[in-house]
Length: 417
Image 1 (cartoon, helix red, strand yellow):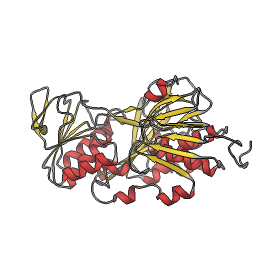
Image 2 (cartoon, one colour):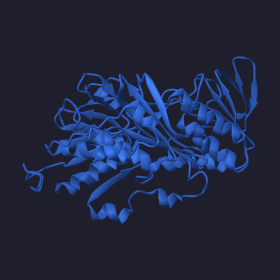
Image 3 (cartoon, one colour):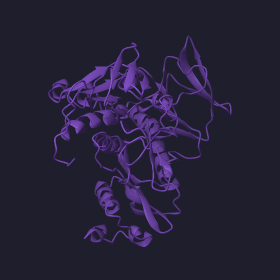
Image 4 (tube, helix red, strand yellow):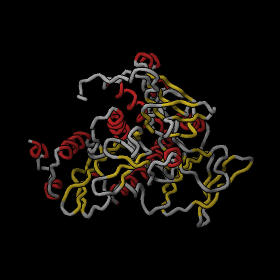
C-alpha cells in the first residue's frame, strides 16, 4: 500500500477503528486515520463527559481566567461530525477481548473492532493519608479538577502545594498572582529534581521565594488536619503545621495500563510499544502517557507531554493502517511560571556536565547538558529562539562543544548551515 492509496474497510460486516481515550493522543489517532484516507467507522471513547480538550492550560491560563472553557475545546462538535468521528463520552471500558476483537463498556454493552488504539492516559497518584478525599484537597488532572480548584481559589486564603514539580509550581504561581498565601512542600532536596539540573532548581526556588512563596524542601507530609471532612492544615514529620484551606496534591501520575495488562499485552511501566506505537498484537496500538517506548538499546521510555501524545498518536494511526511512521524525535516540554517560560529539549538523565549560556539574573538563559562530551538536553528560560535552534540541532543530529555552548559570541546558527 502506498502513501496515496485510499484506505477503506473490507466489504461486508466490519467494525472499524476503536480508540479508547479521548485526550490529545486519542483525538490525534482519529484525525490522522481520516487524513490518511481511512473511510471506515471511527469511534472515540472517553470516560469524561467533555469532548477532547487541552490539558496544559488547566494549571495556568484557565485558573487565571485567561482562557475560557470553550477555548480549551480542541475540536467543535461539527468538525468531529464532518470527519465522521463518533464520540462516545462518559463511557468507561472494562475489558478487551482480543480473540473476539471486542471491548466491553461499563454499561455491559460491547463494541467490536478491526483496529484498536489504547490512549488511556494516566491518573493522579494519591496521597496515602487519611483526609486525602476531604473538601479542600485537590489533585489536578482533568477539567473538572481545574474547575474545582478555580472555584476554591476564590475564597481560599492559605494554599499548600504538596509536591514541587511542574503542576504544583504552576498552581503556586497562579495562587500567588491571586494574592493567596502559598506554601510548597517538597520531599526532595530541590525543586523539579527529577527533570532539571540543580542550577535550574535553584533558579526556580529563588523565583518562587521572590514572589512570596514559602518553599520547604525535604518536607515529608505526615498528616492532613481537618474537621467535618474539610482540610485545615498539613503537618510534616518534623512537627511543623501549615494552615491550609486549599491543598493541592501534585506527587505524580500512574499510567493507566490495567486494560492492556488484563488483555495479555506487555506492560512494563507502561503499555510497551515500538516507534510506530504498535503492541505485540498487530491489531492494537497505543499512544500517549500510558505507553512505554522500547528503545533501540532495549530500554523503555515513558513520556508525559503534548509532543509525545501528538507525534505518537500520528505514528499509531499509521501503524493501524500498516504503514511505517516512526516517532523518534528528541522530546520537548514546557512550563509557564510567573514571567518565565521554561522550554526543555531532550532528557537530562545521566548528564555529567552542564554549562549556562545567557544571563540568569535577567531571567533569560539556557542550560546545556552534556554526557561524555555529547549534547543530550537543553533547558531554555525565556529563550524561545534558542530552544527552536536546539530542536533543529537535535533533528539533524548536530552536537556542539561545552565551550561553544558557553560562549554567547558563538553563533549557534552557524552549525545549521
